[in-house]
Amino acid sequence: MRILGFATLAFLTTACFDTDKSGEGEGDTGGLSGTDGADGVDGNDGTTDSAEPHVSGTIGGTVTVQLYTTADDGVREELAWGDSAYSSDGVVTWPFGKLFVGAYTTDNGHNDYIGSTSIDSPSENGNGYEIDWAMPGGGGDVYVYAALDRNGDTVIGSGDPTGAYPLPLTLTDGDAITGIDITVLSAPLGSGGGCSGTVNVSGDVLLTISTSGGNAAAMLVSTSGAGPYHTDVVSPSTSPGGATAAYSFDACANYGSMNLIGAWDRNQDGLFAPDDAWGAYAPTPDTDGNPVLVGSTDLAGYDVQVPLGDGSGISVVPFVHVAGTVSMQDGSTFDSLAAGSTVYVAALKYRPGTDFDISTTSDTYDVHEVPWADLTGNSSLSYSLVVPADTIAYVWAYADEDVDGIVNEPNEHVASASSDNGRVNTGTANVSGVDLQLGVALGE
Image (tube, one colour):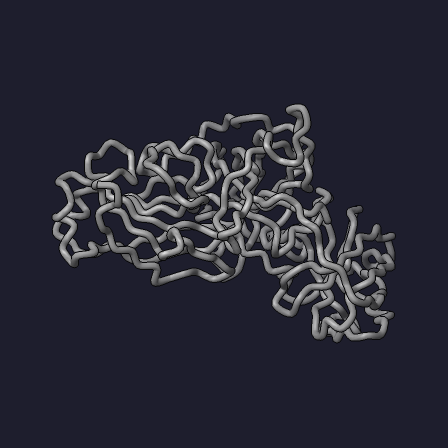
């Protein structure tokens, strides 16, 4: 049984999935761009699938960006906006770019977007959103996440911070779901590195699908899809069969093998996001010529065709699962806990300190709850938590033995995933084998 705690400002206090489908949005939904949920299902080639019947509805909530700093020992600490360099006389100047919110299915082994929106003018106080979604057939499970264009380059890149809702939404026709709140953690902006030398990469971006406006871009990413490292945004002019525009950017010399890719902002929301149309370097039409060798000489005439390839563009992984088991340190069953105890396994945003109310804290990514009825007679339990990719989570287990909702109290059992404050580094793949053994907390 689960309590939802991932990226929500108000931690849900019920252990079941109880989502409001009243159709009434929550919060301020101003400042949103147009959504593109109804214009396609695959979301990567600009095409639509009108042969199958579709179901549709809306998904809404709030996205909040929370700042953090990293101490000298590598521990993350929350940074209040009012205490940041972006605040002057109580007024915060937004330092980042837009927010992207997407909803997708994974039925085909990859992310098929059923709708998205962008938040054009975010603020530090939370940002309402609403997605118009449409999908073929009778509905199904859908995941929702948000990404921050941290450096304002108009590209949702592999290194941009993300936050995700921890459970899939099971959608049926006409659903208007609200309260899907998400928090995105971000470090303040830092200084970027320079190049010891540069080479120029140039050519045309060739759109081979019908367009009605919207910018395009050429980008340089790693062969694994990390990046972009360099980008040039262009405004194509209509041509027979599509549109075209010349691009040119300076890249660091001697990268070695890289992928030269392109994108078209098909929904014209000012972002190049995973559900836009993507393409690749095409030495001849319809031929993916990647990777390219970036050495010490300029690369001229390197045309990029959009769409082309598998449509994946940049590798953006919204979240991963952290999974393992919880057991007693002394090898006993959970019956050795106080009768009626509840065990929680939590992925925390920050290193845990003193005791806290696990039902109200906003400092969790996700929480797995196991009631007494599921503990008795057992010596081990399995858990799985949803955590943003490429981040740090502090994974702990807590036995609430007096059942007051307050965990990490003296004399109650706790366990951490590692000796480093329970720290788990997430990458772009699921993390398994994170096993926890409950022992009595210090300070008894």
